[in-house]
Image 1 (cartoon, rainbow, N blue to C red):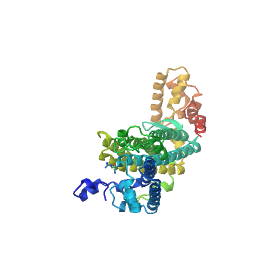
Image 2 (cartoon, protein in one colour):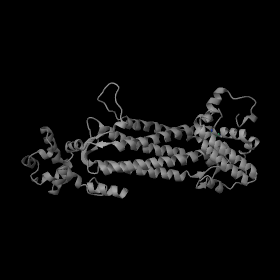
Image 3 (spheres, rainbow, N blue to C red):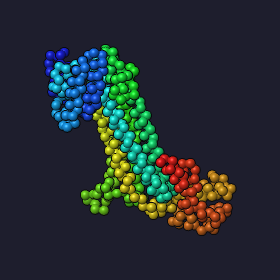
Image 4 (cartoon, rainbow, N blue to C red):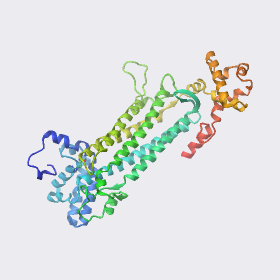
Length: 453
Ligand code: ARG
């Protein structure tokens, strides 16, 4: 039975019910709804709406209901109730009769759903935070394992300068750390309790909202009832945090898909996160990474969805806002899954050090070094840049690396070049010169890892 039949003389159409009911989505709030109801029962008892016996009976019934839905969750949706709040109330009335009908005194589904959803966000947000921290650890472990494994660094997907895998891994650790700090920030901001805001104007009973907020483990109550029931910033923020994090995961996936390609062959992904082709027996496809990249789009879609839903809503509650949950739930599910998957991929990744090193040696990744060498001999950088460009053209035409050109030939481009040029052109020299905070020199990367641990 609906919670609101009195004003109506005819029933809802079946289509309207199907359209309006949110239980198939918001059943996931059942524990939060019960938790909020326990706290609300205490709050109205404290202002004389319930006797202490009634409070005890309601608390007992709510505890029983919690056990029952945990044991048999499928009964919730099967009940056919309008939404999770109706389901809980219906069940209470079945258990304690008319007393169950007293619980909604001074409360509205508007402050109730706002509270339920924030409780859910707190719990799920904390779980995602742990996953982010786990992924950060896993990437830090890659950095440590591969601290001195050489690979080409790219700009424009052109080999630019050599870096180490450790350095590459730490780039993602930086991103994951920002993701963590962003989520922590969101969690702090959403930690206020809307319960006691009523439908929109505030509850008519002199509830101590500070005590109520505290009893639900919120840091404080919300401070404006209109805002309380219509605020979904936390949904937007979580979708936004997820989108930024998924953007990072997707870039990581894209890097690794390329590194894993036959063309690059810098890494090998473990068998447990790759799949084969039904036709081509030789294939080992990076499906896990491709799905991470793919799911990023879906998460962005939910962010745009909730922003668009909220953008023109007048204060206070509007039914449009019921559309907040499906996207958010999917965002948190997808994000969590991708964070777990990414960690598993990193756990098993092998670096093909020789291939990666060979690639770093090719592609004239040490051209900047030659220019810097000319600068050390007194040539202005712009001129050096031009000279080295000519050297590279010559080397390409001969199919050689710069360091394979004999000294006399190099001297033809710039007389200041001496035999001491060659040690400057090795990969080790390229790496070790980047011995500056944030640089790719091995001891810098080691120091960065130590600082992060
Ligand atoms: N199922 C609703 C939602 O998720 C609960 C709030 C309903 N409030 C109302 N006044 N109809 O938004």
